[in-house]
Image 1: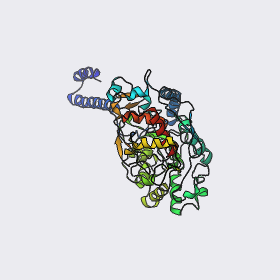
Image 2: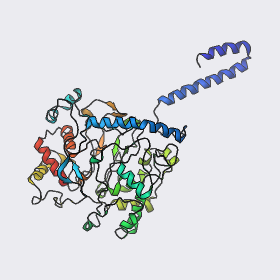
Image 3: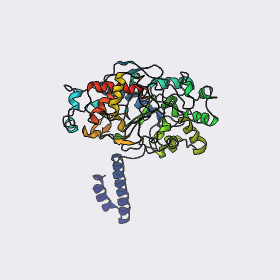
Image 4: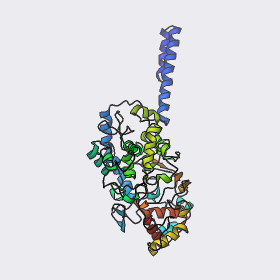
Length: 478
């Protein structure tokens, strides 16, 4: 444009009248302005998802399917570099329905360093020497620039079998090995019928079987809430539009697809509240067990009741926090009185699994606990400082805490995610914690042993090897 304009101007002044020259000059200036605007638009990050898609669906799907193997290889290489992914269950420890709990520290250390040596350093030393274990860095989404809900294969297969609804993404697959996920299907415990124990009957609760399993156990309002929790509604990646990530137009996603049986299957996506994209955090789906005792909800904990969480999720988390794209893809706006409250009421019934070694105050019964577990409880309430945030009986303080993890490493880009610290995170309840791997808000800690090493460094506790072992034994009791 800048090269041609002087030539055109010279020719025009020789052959055309002034009025025509003025019109042409304005037209050329307009083209130049639009070109600059387009260039700026490409460089300037947007808060919004693209609404108008200029490619047809077949072209999008073909390109993303071609990229899928390299993306997954990149993610699996990252996991292999960060963790020991072998099958090493903890001795005689299982989840509520019998799945072995993986034990041992799985985060790999930098060469030539030990956990004891690392714990003896200051955060500044660890940062300057670049010794912060990579497994303690934020865990990126398998395709962080794309993001979106991603489900484990066990859940995908079961929903397809029961409902003929397909939650397979053509562009990605789930990354964490099944060994490190919650048992599937998880047990269901109800605060209203503790005498029944697990009421799941070993099934995944869906729209196809919820009535058969719960009619007679729930009142009509609660049963309606469960129906809505099991009903699929349009979502960012699963809908009818050309920018979906399912090969066929989709009915969408149900609340219980992530919070399976009112618990979790470790389905993942990205928080909707942060921009630009590389600063968004991966989310590990939290359990809904014990929400009746919690008061902070949503990925940034901005919601204060289960009702707020239930009402807002399908407008925010379902559409990556973008209400504009939600309108295009078919957002389900819930009515507070007739839909939100029944859904919340059912969620409030979801109980933690039994903990037979705990008394009514959430402390170990000395007649039932081992010496190792009792020593672990002493560490929990003493040197370990765990109870400063996780106090009994549900082992949460309903607060946010900033662990200031950025003290330990320099900002760095990892597979599309900018690791700059975690900011304030919620104190999650520790009741039933062995049923809920992996740990921390993004699932970066595969075992409870990993979690203890992480907090031993972050809180500068300097726990001994024996104290950490005892503490893990206590956590298994919760």
